[in-house]
Length: 385
Image (cartoon, rainbow, N blue to C red; front, side, top):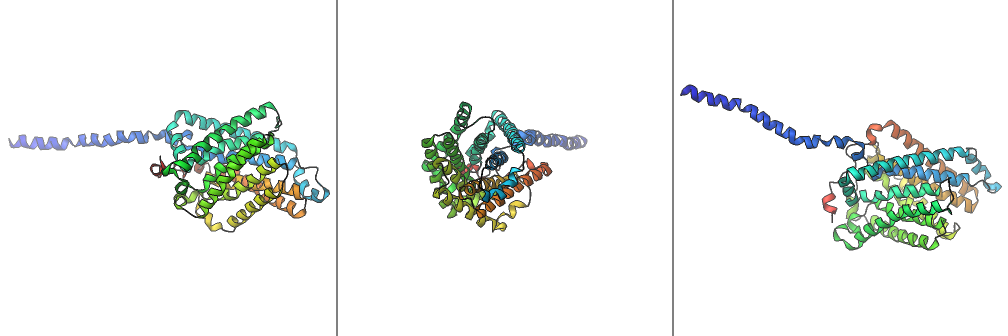
């Protein structure tokens, strides 16, 4: 009986492998987490924020087009313009086709994500930061269309494509702005952040595209919609309400959107009115002042510059918008100071664009991180309606 009593105790110890089986249980249960090999795939890591790159490419293409078309200027400004005229038109064509290839590739990848990982796209749509970047693909397509060397703005393909790319912007407006008006948990005072201005830029890009096609009424409608919400956003963000406290420090390059919105507004009104009038100049001077205010505070971006992130591309397309409006201003004023300002901003925009291309190529490991400030939906439950 004593020996029999010992054996069970031995069996209890031998039963320890069953505890090993239970330890394997967590391994099996962790396999769904380890089954996140999809988490390491490009489809799960990519998000609409990566369209900042294509907006930068499309903006650069439009900038080079505007500069290349400004050949018949007065002798007073020829000394400045000839710097750009030395570059053959093939440079613009190469940039445009590269921009098109990048935009098509990224659009296909995001379309595949919508098919195979729709839940992640839905979370992005419901997030107070991620939803704003859903405007970026359509901004990219519209900017690229406006610089298209294949067909002019009056052709039927141009009109059809412009309508196709503009409809999603209007749909997003109805959804996003409607929530700001009616849904308590998604009031603007609690959700406003610098990336909210991307929605304003989307409306202004549509307004410029409509004006280029001669649809003045539609252009004024979209312009007024964008500017009213920009004023509301500007005041809300200026007052530093509770929504700004949840903005990640890594996304601080988005503060450059403060001057990108009035820059695009100046371009849009220039197309609507047919001249770079006083209103366009006022918006340009506002954007220039906001740009100088941010540049004079580099400490604001110190945390965001510690490690490369795709958010850095916000520096590029915002500077490109400012360079675009400075080019239009220089064509209207025809003075050396205006031309010099255009030259400085255009060169700065191009250098930042090339520098970010180089940094992106050298930081391929950090280009698609597993944890991204846009994909971090830790506050998602607080903002879900």
